[in-house]
Image (tube, rainbow, N blue to C red):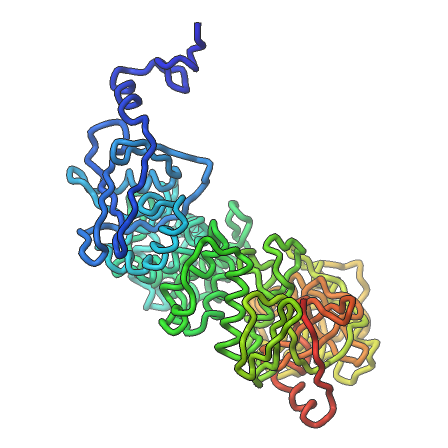
Length: 613
């Protein structure tokens, strides 16, 4: 006799199936088979009214330009292992639980009528590479043509109603500085802000495709469960948080979200809607850089998900093709940037700390599929280490071609030959500030870096150290004021955080120096200009006496240079045979704004050839 759990008359929990269940299982036992789409057609999904325990739907082929009214769903796939079944055209279809919940909510919202939607996981045959490529190429139009876009953040959580209440309140007071700040400090709204930070921290905002779906939708509703607010509300409040960042930081200085142990003021200013509220960009590299931390299942979507947002002049160079390798797609990106800009500003994005190279990319081709472990020097300031056009050659299988002369670029370049101004060779490196750090880590790094720079005997050692630690980003104060603030801060923190460390006479004097700056301003300075620039970095010096900050994987004898046509200096690792591997971009004190080119023109620096592999 069969075990109850395996008996056809019992479900997986041991519950005896009723006659209705048996009919459903018997009727809907077939797998859904997709019919091919004609050119210009899409599938829409009709969610039928609630007449059975299953969510029943019907697919229809329609011409996109003449499609009936439909709702385009924007969602995160969620846990791909958490599945649910729906019935489509009488057949079972397995989808992610998160999409199932979105469909279920829209059916309830539309009852008693059927609801017509478009959802990529159902309306595109994901197993047909040719169809997938063709449908992705018109994805932007799918969202443009929709009646509205339903952006599904997920089922309603226990505190989501507090987040919605706060959004509705803040959007009303965002233009009144006094009312907005009063809301920040009011204990009545404390739990609401924590709830909103949790919403902004959701998986939805990290999804790569969401950027196009929200930007292209003509009317976007953001759903927390069954509650929705227009996208404009989320965007308006997010912009207000950025405008009042100083006050937000003061109100929630040490309050962290337990889900990820991140301070909530940082989440509210930097996460959620802020990641979608991007200025209209005109260069492919700008969009790629802004979306580095967004996630997608297929690494090729780091490009394909942007095509609907790009100007036609750029879009025409790329056609979605899921049969291509990731290496080919990412190489094509670099080739296009080289051809169209004649610059090497993509190089900083090839910075890698982890050595995992699953796509077998050369060291100089950015891997857009991985989260950047470190914020690039290139995106921290308006640097222009070289304003000239690049001089380069792409080399494949022993043959090269000079692109700056307009000749042919190989289809699969494996090496990049560049011209760069030699700055120096690394001969000393300082302690690293780790990713997950305490103030003590930065203080110990400061003491070590200060000891190193003293070895140079430079008259401007204090100013050079402070400029380097802040990457010369401080515009509010003169160099003399910056130096006073930095040394005062470090001296004060050393006394409070590391009291066993004896201060030398210079630091003792600095700790007592009056600044006329509030504690809140000093805390903001520490976070913005010290923690933000020193995290996951280490100080270095060259044999030639230059100093800078780089990623932690810099080594002795690495080469410091400024490539022609690159926004920042870079670090190269010498390999066998006279070749080099790209290591990272770097802050090199004094060389962020064209000094290398000036010295080369005067004959004080050499222009050298480097072959990157």
